[in-house]
Length: 323
Image 1 (cartoon, rainbow, N blue to C red):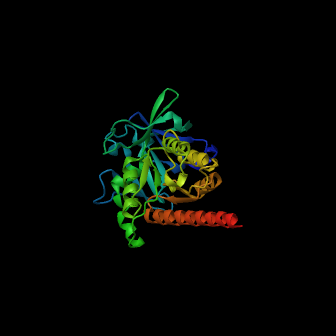
Image 2 (tube, helix red, strand yellow):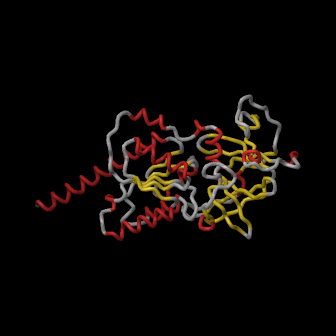
């Protein structure tokens, strides 16, 4: 048993790098963000659960917590292990939930730049969008970075974004403030945009990663228009190919023209450690998926605060001119 926190590999904030734990299933190489890994353990017998999803092996209790075990080989339509006695459970934690992913071997941990990762161009291993968040090429190896959030949401839809959560916000009017959504998952971006539209924020700009978002903001700056006419608030994921959310946040908050833009990190990775990183980079708020109603409330608050600041600045300038 090894804790992921014992790897002694520490990432600096905003470097646009990712640590991935590499593992195999039927000799194919996959990866998962180390930030989502609590520990790795030898596979153990599990208690089957009646009427559960076919890829759920069952539950087990390594200590004081009952954890659901997902058979990744079965989910990916790959062959079962030929040496099950050597199999591994990767214990993960994201979206404030813990799961064990049953894999065949763990290869190790590597530190890779997001610029070395590409979004898959076509569907792989089933599913409407595919289950790879990125394909990494590293030391002559191709590593499929699995979208474990999508896997869990497919198996248990209630763990994902729920439109019904927006009902507690009450009746809301139309709001034309432009909201920039930075999210690489096609499924999640559609749900986020749809949620914002239902909450009244009908003017949304959707981009696939931090690089596309930064390119968009550079175009806005070069236009000479007021920034707020094009972006009133940014909602960004953290895990994204080409440029991650932390690097993007650093660029925005280091820019004299953009640093006043409210920026919210909306990610399954948000925990105490990640919050410290986000705060150091200047993120205005950080919230864990799938808390969509809380996200909308934060956008309300941050854009209202921005309006108040703008009004005060205008009044100050008018007073100065009156003198």
